[in-house]
Length: 180
Image 1 (cartoon, one colour):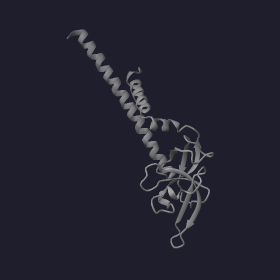
Image 2 (cartoon, rainbow, N blue to C red; image 1 turned 60 degrees about the horizontal axis):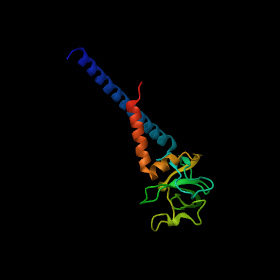
Image 3 (cartoon, rainbow, N blue to C red; image 1 turned 45 degrees about the vertical axis):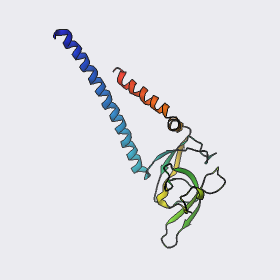
Image 4 (spheres, rainbow, N blue to C red; image 1 turned 60 degrees about the vertical axis):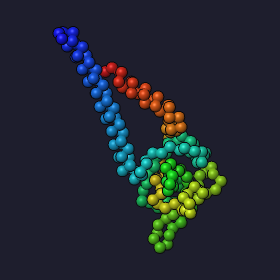
């Protein structure tokens, strides 16, 4: 092929090498994020250490789009605490305040009743059919801090999936076409 053919092959090889380097870098970023998430799960004791407020049920304290930081300790849950919980049969966790605590005399386990600050009544209508109280296994964590409005990115990408695909495509193009 000669000098020109060798040069073209060398350039093609270099481009493939750059693309592979970028792909490996992207993979390392994703892997790092997963490792950080798992570490946060271990440190906080919560299956989801960070959640986004999706409704206005906790206004004025927390607004839609706020990010909450959770922690789950062995301490008993008390009235007045803000908790994030799952309901059997529902995928999306709920952020509400504990309004009543019921301690079972025979086992010492604590059941809780919750309510959104901006809601009229308690959450018994949200619970699974026939369920009157939440048990400890329903609670994902207690709110220990928040970051206002930052969760809107997640809400927008969930409600408008086309934006998510455009961002992913743009980032992919950026990674592939950027020069070192």
